[in-house]
Image (cartoon, rainbow, N blue to C red; front, top):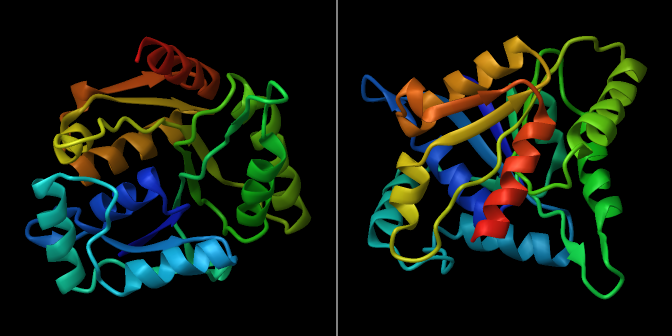
Length: 232
């Protein structure tokens, strides 16, 4: 059973962890799943709340709440502050925010990069990284990918896979269905990354392959997200 680690357990990450944990084929769960939060006061509170098996107050959607409740009863929902979980991950979903500083008119990229570096220092050979954060176009290709390579080379690791595929969640009472049925955009650094990511999304959301739109670069996917947000 492959292991999925979800980095960042906010509005996006908690939902992603839930759907990954609930992915089934032939009535059997497909993945071992764990969510990782920062080792901070806020992060520890998030982890404690999730592990208490209480229903998260992030949405008012009965379908999602029922789905989440079923998984907690089966001990499928797990969270931790231990970043050593990345070391055994086959797939890492990066769901942390890259916020914009409106006062100073710039993206708060430094804290986000620290999160990426923390992951890059731990992951193993052939790990697939799927970035779901909203980022300035070109960030994955020009900043994140070189940073990951630099850290992996130091550890003698040559192979890894990287895709950008932004979150697509409709807030409110249609939260579950918006995650389950919406088209997915993926932009990868190579064909193998695209193929691996596509398979993961088909498994997690039981999507038809026609509902997964592939781009040849992460920058194209990042640009789509900026356009979508602007439209909203």
